[in-house]
Length: 133
Image (tube, rainbow, N blue to C red):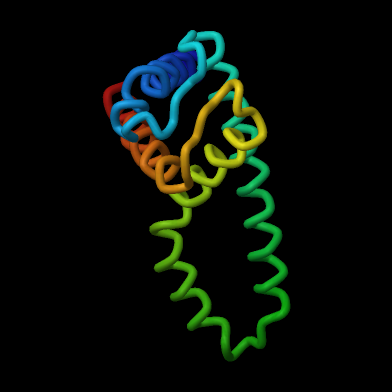
């Protein structure tokens, strides 16, 4: 069942990256040469960069948590809770932006704001697909 869900989600996200993201971002994020193979490669690359960014964020959070004095931990946790509402979109947008900067012939990304809109759309599509399945 997990494999089926993963394949359906991947197909939906690749189709979204190819057909919905360009008009949604006003051609700010576009797969160059518009092929499913390139879109799959781009999504795999974005996923790898995303994983690295989440790992770096976890390391930084652990370092900050270890270095905090016990009395100041509660305000930091409240702040982190508020920030975590927006961090996933920022991390995903960062992954899209960095991958586009590293591989401009595969994925064109005009700006970070375009990447942020693409991340928002990909997040919505992921949640919709997972709700349906």
